[in-house]
Length: 202
Image (cartoon, rainbow, N blue to C red):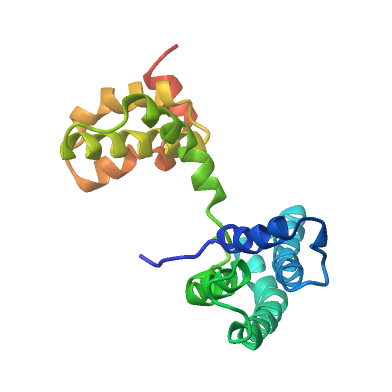
């Protein structure tokens, strides 16, 4: 497993600086300059989506366009890290970004990695909201069971499967699974909608 940083979190730190400055914040300030660097990185991602690039093409695009921006941004951060009070909002933003740097640039090593975890955060939001209703799991086993079932449901949704029918399909065929390959075949990204329709008629 490789730990990948989230550029949205890094961006949020600099955004807090501009919010604190209010009307004084502008693109010529330090926080504004940092946000501009990050927006350039996301512009590359937007163009890649609009062009429908493959993972390999996106990787090449990041190497030629994002890496130079990242190199310049890192230099910019180092030029300011010792000039800004570390306890200030800007100091915290700069130190956070530099501290996370190896993880933040990890997305450029593969075309299928995203520069942030927004998709994950959006996927777990229903769970986080629901958790407030039941506060906590009573046991470790219960927490593990919840994690497993939510992972299955959200993975099914991300693969275009309706969770209710996928779970019916899963519970019908799970007793028949004997080997690792059998279990792998039941995971959401290996199940086609057609197979669910044939196995679990509506």
